[in-house]
Image 1 (tube, rainbow, N blue to C red):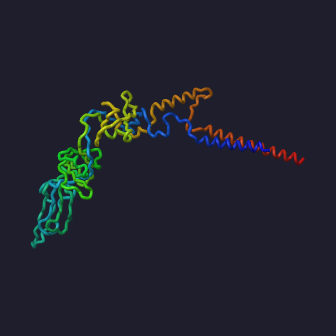
Image 2: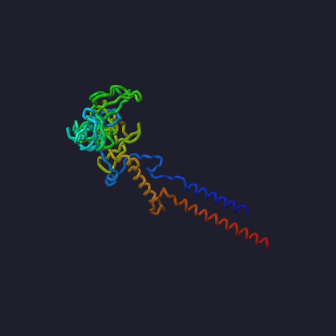
Length: 374
């Protein structure tokens, strides 16, 4: 009486084990280990994929690598190249001849003021620009009352500007007049403006314990405008002779950095090469070990290459699949490691076995009951 229910229970346990086994991770193909977030070795990227990823390469070269000090600040107009326009008499604005942002010549009329003195008509005075440049501010409109010495316009010659940054007290010794600098602004991310440290501030800010640094920058096309945010890299020293690559070609973290190097014989293959790096600046980084002059490294698009499966791992996976297909009884079918359909089939078979055992138990019970009635 108890053998069949025990068998049914065993079937249920077997089914549960089968389902549990179906959720486990089975042998993965080489190179697909989920624990390894970043691949190693060579990866293969077709020319079409390279264009889609925007891949660009640059050669490792022997050059000087300067060390730099980074400052954050803003662009300011040079006070010696700026001028304000004001009225010498009280009166009322009757005409305006220039707009903000407009280029004006030295002496060009900007505003006309009618005097408050009696007269028929009252006397009118025109005021012109004292410098040639760009109108950076306008403070009046027609009909405004003006008082003596009130600023009506401001004009600045922006062919040269100042990038003003600040250094903290512990960095002051690294700054000197005449130091070369490279200035960048977010408005022109791919452009570098060369400058020279012209002077440093006279005193430290008591709150931040920092000192102002004034960098003169040539601005012939007036791309730089007052109050633009800016960063400046002051050249402080560096290695006179080193193998260097663009800084953005280096990936990884401190102590584990690498770059992708294009194969000499196949332009569609890139090797992940570990590096030992040295000094760096805002543009270049020294490579102490890992590269030779002339090696081509990926500068743009390298980040995407980290997650591609290495060529060796793909070839090993293909060889493994071919070997499995050649075994007796394989029938030429390729093994699929990510979809264990056999688990589902086995579970369904066990379910059918459970139903059959239950039906057999009920039939026997009814037969025994019928014989007892007789």
